[in-house]
Length: 496
Image (cartoon, rainbow, N blue to C red; front, top):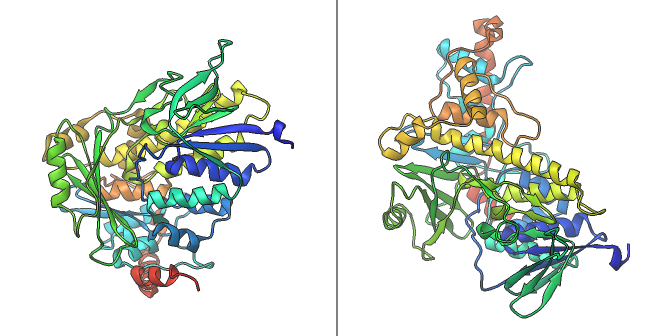
């Protein structure tokens, strides 16, 4: 394909979202697209998305990224799940891990066997039957080509963007430094974007434009007036403060999400520091009070000044509008509670590559992209709302609101199914698995009224042997792993 036949793709904005898009297309669409990324050193990016989820590893394999090279470049640590503290009730905690819990039968998930065991007097926790969860609690971790342990990463977002920039530029992605001062549109009435005018006077023209300009939505909203669907009545937190601190203890292989009376606080361990932040609802907690609370609840010397972030949960009414596709914060935001932000960028660019408009903008492709993206976001939205809705906390106005708020019918249905008969499910192309829904609902105190009677066909001896041997085996595997900090130091040691 000659240069004139290549589709000119212009990415407006760098940061994690922009460079993920550039890297993916440069690798997978090489020879068919000409990619230019515009970013300004004057515009800071929001680097709070430092925790990830396991599908990132598949994305890296797609790009041929070496894990150890990536981890060394981004000061990454491993992540087996999230420790949720004070969510179901004050002084209670549980771990939402990335692993499979127990063993299921064709008719009943493992939770039914566990519930039957509890009724028979077994005192084991549900998480005792998950290797990843047990390893997280013990602070242990290891991986190899033969390992089946499921994990993700904690990473330094700005270093990750730099890592992907280097990857992209080595594959002919052109970076243009500059601030976009004007968005040009077609004069034929179509409203299509034709080019981006920079403060230098340069005009960058293209066929397809990817908006990675963050919450501003410079192209998708400020130019195309796409509209926004507000979810703040379900996800009322609208503010965050982020600060970095020096490490004072070995890095645990999990993220901490610690609820407070008006939201929650995160703690993300990296190799060289700890990422901290507080998420809150400004209706119930002032910015000044949030800052004091954050700084009073951190460990180690602060390395940065707290960064203030204001947001509104929700999504664009269209993620692909005319010849513009929004990725990252420009597309929507469901807050960082389950570390889905980077994943959504990766899924967005993979979806675009599958539906890439080589023959021009086709309404059928646009419609399918928007349908799949909206469904994905709504399912993630429901899972995050679950953490706020299913709680016993009534100690503050914020938690009373969350506990009593109306939720989407789709989530109400899931909660009722689990409450009545311990039933959970995963729809096609849905991110969170049955294990995730079950761990969070049980962890937040939602105990089913009944369970599938097929498990009662096991004799007491069979049930005892099934549960005890599995619990012992998983504990033994977890205990055999090295300490996470020790493994990180060996695994990420610079090669000679």
